[in-house]
Image 1 (cartoon, rainbow, N blue to C red):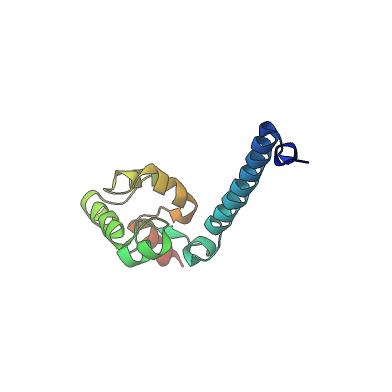
Image 2 (image 1 turned 120 degrees about the vertical axis):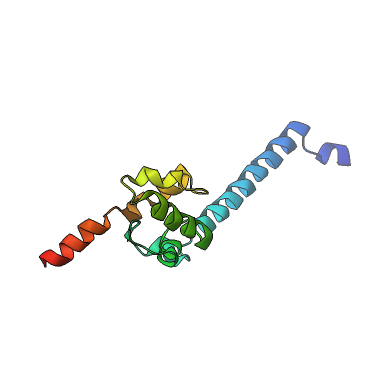
Amino acid sequence: MTNVQMMLPYSVVVRRVGALLVLLSGLWLNTLWAQENDASDPAETTPVILNINSADADTLAAGLLGIGLVKAQEIVRYREMFGDFVAIEELADVKGVGMATVEKNRHRIVLSTQQESEHKLKSK
C-alpha cells in the first residue's frame, strides 16, 4: 500500500478534527463554569441580610456583592442627602450602582427606617 492509499479522505479528517474541537471546547467551558461556581467567596456563601437604611459603609461593602468600600460610601452619602431608602430599586439611583447589582443583592437587603428600628427597641 502506498502513502496515498493509507490517507483518510479529507471529509473524514475534517469531521474528526471538528468533533475533537467540540469536545475540547466543552471541557474548557465546563472548567470555566466550575471556577465561576466555586464557593470560595464567603460573601456569596453566607446569607447576609442588611438594612441599607442603617448599615455603615464597611458593613455594606462586606455584605453586598459587587459593592466595594467606595460604592458603599456613596450609598451612605446618598442616604444622608436624600433620607432613608423607601424601595430597594432606589439603590440604583446611587452613583456607580446599577440595576444588575441591585438584583444580585435583592435577597440580602431589607428596608427599615430609623424610626421603625427605634420603635421596635422601645416596644421590647
